[in-house]
Image 1: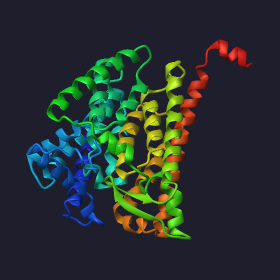
Image 2: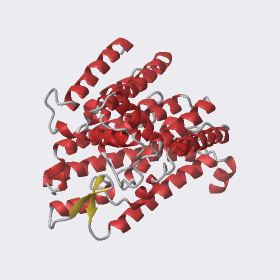
Image 3: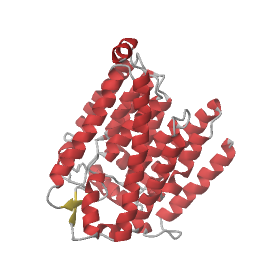
Image 4: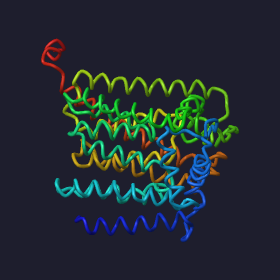
Length: 392
């Protein structure tokens, strides 16, 4: 597929996103698509008056996010300015993929990003995650240029923490340089933002206090129980609807420890050179998938990250890549059905909504397992001759 048809497709799909998000055309429960942007604008209005959301439990972002919110608010209020910036970030990702695709004669990466909103819904431009994904995509496409790679990851981490996982994708022999550039940029950015906003990292305390969001994998047993034998309460806390029931703290701890363990193994493989032959994008995709499936939150907009990483990974597809892609498409597609179409039913324990959500979870886990098996296979192939001899 050539650049011109892809570009036309991008224009058409994004026009659909905007018309749906602003309720110009019909989309079920469209009033919820850009609902968070109204909150961003409210924060930005207060920040413009030097009132920072220090004690707001819904503020869950590193300090650079405030700059983006404020920029959108100053361009235009009523969500227009933020969505305009989101479209620019989305277009930048698409342009980067098109440009790389020309040199590598590959159209699949740009096509994956093109269809992302059709699969996961117009929410792609109604949340903050597209900006972070831009930093991540730029970093992975610049993986051979350590300075750009490290700086891009630092910017992403100052927007939202998860891009720090991309350091696991640093090329062999350049990891320390990448970490150095990341650290220098992150520290300098943090100091500058702290001068502007003294308690700019107060969000960390809010993150520690979060419980199980009803869409998370850890909350699935509670939702199944809620759809079946009994009722399970939920409440709006820390910007999300969370399960209010006994045992949630223990479940949260268990899934967090599982995530730490799996990422620790990935880190071990990285440090000892066992996954150096793996594609950096594949390593990054696996790390982010692990962080998502073991998180206490599984919002539908998280799939924006996955689509961005999938698109870069498509330049050098890993084994069973098409299967991973289909599973992600199914999971993200069901995510669009759950939110915003069936969200109230899901919260109340509607059997059909919970059943669909279970499929959403299982397909995402399946994709993660395949990605894990691929990287583990690479780690086993890269054992040193000495270790192989001892094992035999």
